[in-house]
Structures are given as C-alpha cells and as structure tokens.
Image 1: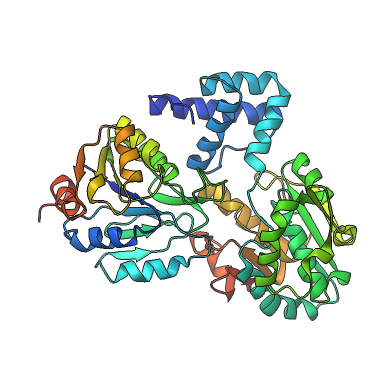
Image 2: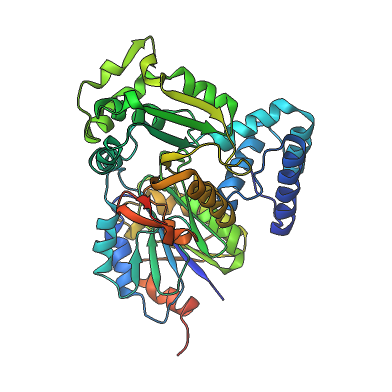
Length: 278
Length: 189
C-alpha cells in the first residue's frame, strides 16, 4: 500500500469529495460504506493506477469511465468460495429446507451475490434437497460485470479441491464433480443450475424492494456498510420478506446491532439464521 | 493518554498472549484487540475460552460492529480481517494479505488511522513479517510501538521484521511487557 496522506483531516476530505464525485457522476453511492475497508480498497486502486493522491484518483475517476469500472470491481468483488462456512449449509439443510418443503413455491434472494459462488452452492443444495424445481433464486449485485461472471458459472479449476471439501463438509450428497465440466484450467458449472436463477442489477444502497421473498441470503456483504446503511438494508429486507420469511447473515454479522432485532427470532443461533416474526 | 492496545502474533502465539494478559494489572483498562494467525478451521470460540482462563477481562470473539469496551479483549475471528473504526470493530473478507487473514498489518493500519497518537501496538513472537508495516504506521502516526525482544521470542522472524521496519519505543522480554503497559497507560486509582 502506498504511503497514506500524512494529514488525516486532509485524507478524510479527499475521500469525502471522491465519493461525492463518484455518486454525482455515476450514481454509485459508497458514501455510507464502512470507512476502514473502503479506505484500503481506495488505496489499492490508487496504487494500481500508479497515482500519488486520492485527489488524483478522483480526477481520473471523473474523466475516465473505465477507471470507474475498475474501482467498481474493487468495491464489489466479494472474496468468497463455494460452500464457504460449510456448517452454514448443514444448518440450511436441517433447519431451512424442511420449512421450504411446506411451501408450494419458494422465492430466494441472494443479495450482493458478487461472482456467484454462493448462488451455485445454494442451487446445488436446493437440487439435492428436492426443492430446486419449485424454487426461484434472484441473484443481485451492484455491478453488471460481476453478474456476467456469475451468469457464466465458470470458476478456476484449481479451486475445485477446496470447494469439494467444503461441499462434503456442508452435507453434500453426491460426487461434486457431477456439477461441472473441467476444461483446461476451468470448471464450467452445469447450465441446469441456473435455469431457475434470475441475475439482476440491484444496488442495496439506493434501490428499493422488487419482490416478496421466503428467504434472503446476504452473507458478508453488510460488513462493508456503516451502521446507517446497514439499517437501511435491514429495513429493505424486512419489507421484502414474507411473514415467517428467513434471513441468513454471515457468521460474524449480528442482527442485534440493528433496530430490527426484535422483528426476528433465531432459527439457528450460531449460523445467524433468523425468522421474521413481526 | 492511550485509548486502545493492539497485539499481533502468529500461530503459536497463544502462549505469549496468555502470559501477557495474565500479568497485565487490572488498572490497564484500554480495550485490547488481538490479531493472531491461525488456520481457517480453527474455532475462534475455543481460542476465546482458552484465553479467558488467563484473565479477568472479558474475552470476546466479536461480531462486525461490536462496540469496543473497557476491560475487554477481542480476538479477531479466523478467516476475516479485523479492523477498528469510530469505537467499534469492523470485519472484512477481503483477500488475505501476505497469506494472512486476519492480517496484523490490516488491524494495525486501521488502528493507526482511527486512533493516531492514542494507539499502542505490540508485536509478539511469530514466524513471518506480518505486522511490521502496520507497526511502522502506528509509530508514524504518533502511537507507541512495542516489540517482544527477538532473542526471547519463540519465533523471532516477526519481532525482527518489526524492528527492521520501525524504531520501537520498547523492546522487551515477554515478562516485562505487562509492567511497561502499566507504566504507559495504567489508570491511577
């Protein structure tokens, strides 16, 4: 990382102006992202662009849309893996799937799906639990480019060993390699896994509700937001869930710091799976 | 006055952190945040329990946005970076930095950012160079840099790298760090 601005006040001003500029020029609102991680990502972009100051980065962002695309990628790629936190998938099979079996049809929202690892994991799980045929997954992200990657369903072959382990520990019921075709250094996942998936651009920071859901998965996305934006998103989720709708967060995300804490009960404490009650 | 203490160590540093906490007088009230390298599968709750046996402070395996409190110790969860901002912890799943997540540099840099001259950073035993750049940032922002004396460290690579990167305010054997902290930021009754 390049040397930080010596003056913290100046740095704060530069970041504020840059985010304001990005919002007014492109409509992407990062003004309520959690500062510490956002700052790291901005400095990473600064370094890659071989620039000296955040003000120079602002200049380039405003004048070169391609630079904005690169920054958007930095800010929207969520480093994840298929069946990350296998215990979550075990809990989903045991505690959520039986509930979904009682519904004629299930709508699931993967909010902030990034490059799609979680979407494919979920599709595989639903398939194995006999739920995929009558389910629809809405996979959304702020960034069209990462959605294109997600739609492709092509992941590095070298990751498959780890994903296979995760899959098995996550309660996988068959041979994981059944789900993809290996070609050269890539693994292309079966088209059938995305038959019931709708990929769409949606910005949690600025867009509203667009459907009613039985389940919302939003894991390790809101950790990048500040408290005010987290509250906005929790409100959006609350409004988008059916009565008894299920909300799944990351292992280290607690609903207790949100003002919607009382509107949910814990379906699985450790795995942060909640059910709407109010 | 100092408002936060951050400790970095790598795998194998559990014993060092335990001993440090054990010897730390109650009059040191600052919240303590620990970034310790360990395997992805390690259970953070277990580390929390192990450390809890060595201290009367409350040891926590924190969630994102957990507020920082006096007399508390926070262990960065495995497979997340742990950062600090505006009096609370923030987590991220950004790519590992130099193969480490949690990364000590990431924690230290965020602490230098939010606390400036009110930050204390400590590098203990460890087998790689993580923490060196972060400790230098803490120091550059006016905070205090403490390094475990390399020859008394189980693994000296991490203290050596920290000392090469910055002029530490104190280089001490493990057993003397608690007393130094007491002198630095212990509250008088």
